Amino acid sequence: MSQPTIPTTPSDQPTYALPAPLLDLLSQYLQEQMTPTIEIDPNQLAYRWVGGRTGHLQPLSVNLFLSLDDLHGIDKQKSKLVQNTRQFIKGYPANHVLMSGTRGAGKSSLIRALLQAHHNEGLRIIEVARDDLQILDKIRAAINALPADCHCRYIVYCDDLAFDSQDESYRTLKSVLDGALDSEQDKLLVYATSNRRRLLPQMMKDNINIYNGQTDEVNPYEAIDETVSLSDRFGLSLTFHPMDQ
Image (cartoon, rainbow, N blue to C red):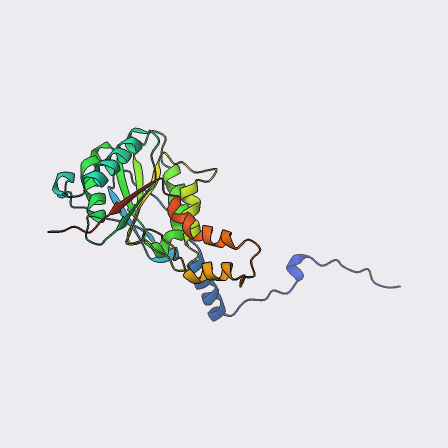
């Protein structure tokens, strides 16, 4: 007569432990892939994102000595930017802004002057570098998580914005500019400065390939539209020209 079999339980199964060096590598990899929770203090006037994907918002000590009246020779651009920012602060419809043109014309100075003029009304600045644009969705979520009675408005400031043809990070920026279903455009706008009017390069060879039929794409003009569409996502474009003495 055969003996009855005793069912095994999970505790009877052998356990296998990973070597400690492999566990350390796995832990380091997971830490590099995870973005920490972002918390925003409405009392802080300005932040800068540092550290790449696993970085953090670094509070900035801002010197509020530069005023809008100190900036001369750009009155037309200044008036449009100020009007758009005032609408944003008051809760009225406002546009994302692209400021392009020659260097040293006052594009970045306008951002600092805006903070000086309107920080008492709830204007705040978050500076994000081009290489860190993938964090924009996390920043937007942190702004949406602020208390309902918080009346601060946040400008995400991208300085010297431009992309090459191999850079895919511009797609994250496009999603913010277009507005996702869960976005709160009344609390966040993007103000960007660039020395280039078109943020993505346009190649003459693309046109030549289309005209000569040397392309594998069924709709080749859509590829060209893709390169110019990013700058068109900004509702307000301000151009800064070289100044004479």
